Image (tube, rainbow, N blue to C red; front, top):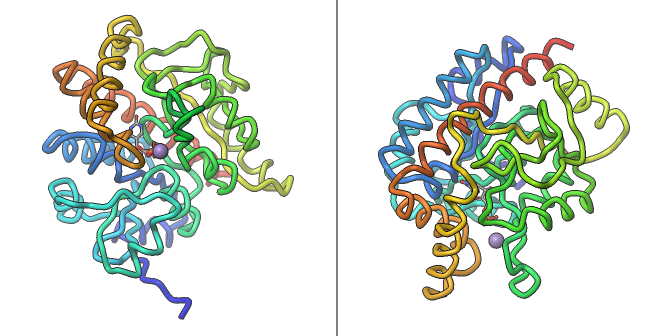
Length: 304
Ligand code: PSU
Ligand code: MN
């Protein structure tokens, strides 16, 4: 049986029929990246930002074994409060669907689902990457390999300093992923608009990013693009303020023996606690900013 259940929200179904731009959004950020109720407020706000920018939001998740491309208001609210939701990457999707379970999609899984649904652009906050100490833990996010495999343009704010950002850029290069800083030379570092690292590529116009997406496919190259969109200046948190917090979060993760899939959610939650919510405020500004840029890219992809 090759069938699997995939369903579209009413607004995504309409956008597909009308041929209007659609932006994919992930759900792990909702279930594993932010606490309730802020997670729901942010998810709703980001969807509203996409609509206000002229595109249709498609938040992606597996609910009771059905792959949903776009969630209605009740589904979004239910997911934001659900307990025991699985975190789905490339490895986990088929098992979750086959078992009739509920899972939230990471960047990797959202790319796979978006591509299946014919959606070419996806907005998120931060991508997974190479963790600090990966030379002994081997902890490298499947998001990086997915960017090399699946033709979706992902708009993120660079990589968080919980990761080894230089090694993350190296793996992206090995995977053949175009890493494009938007409007600047520096690779943005999630909380900060700039980092000491130069981005491999730079583009200043969303229309050109859309064009590059199409040319990549025309060249016969698999894989997507990573657009690194800097955090708005007024939302930045100085790297020096966060360095001790991140170090503390890593120490706590080691003490508690956190490993595998649990590492990223644990670090994000600890940083939220240790900054008394300041990290979340910046995170929200980042995701909203990325949703707006992704909507513009989606419009250009549609127009050409
Ligand atoms: N980084 C963030 N916020 C997030 C994530 C990463 O700043 O919410 C989530 C995304 O869903 C990403 C996933 O795809 O964590 C990566 O998890 P891992 O490191 O286990 O691959
Ligand atoms: Mn990992």
